[in-house]
Image (cartoon, rainbow, N blue to C red; front, top):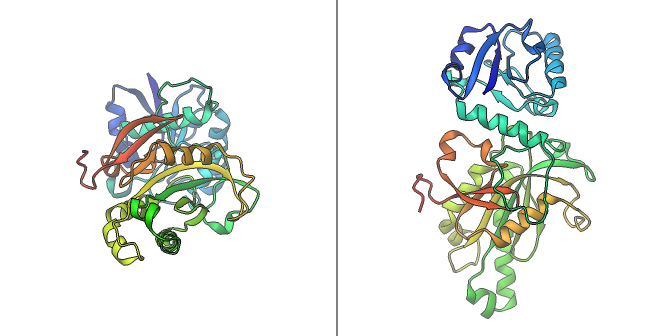
Length: 331
């Protein structure tokens, strides 16, 4: 049984851990800041940062980072400015307690899975068909809050969107090249317009689709809302966004992955397991008309949004999830 230790003297914070204290999945105790981060067990420690000055917090986080054991941060006042930096240091959860929110057993287990996935070596051995454990994005590379922090030639963890228009038989086989090019251009421009407000960049692109990159700070990726909007509004997009004369039918998936970055048009020499994976997934697994997520992206969703997605098995080393209805009815 995994031990959870809360380092806090705040009564309200302790109340937020009531479900953890009652759970049969974990043993739980609270300790003071004086002793908590130095205890020698392999427990999962949550440190409450409320009322801790910046100098003391730096020292305590440094101790936690050196243990190699899982740890998370409770920030009731939202005082941490750079949440992504916590994950760089080794944190596997960040909890704010907004609106009286309580920590759930499921979330703690996801954080533990995150720690395990990050600590374990990755494997792509041939013939390994065992289903992988559900896991959160692993900070295997630099994070970037926005594109001003992204430099060519360096490696980052990105939110990656795969999107590909499936042209109708008339368009792909019978229409003239001019009309096909107009459709391809219109679809590219539509995607570029939709991802722009979310700091997305169309990156690798062929005739009918490709990859869009979004800077990822290690804690959240709001592109889920844009991707859901693309699926739900494909009928009006079909009418308003180009000379399509048909209802757009496209494949769509979101993944958190690592790649070196080069400007568009200079990506021919990039070698990335995650880029290969998302292209393979798009070509071989995705059905048009649905939004898919990988197990690297799913933990970024709220509990309510997760209910909209149903597991579809696994592909290569990832579990795959599909949104089949915005109303939580899976068909």
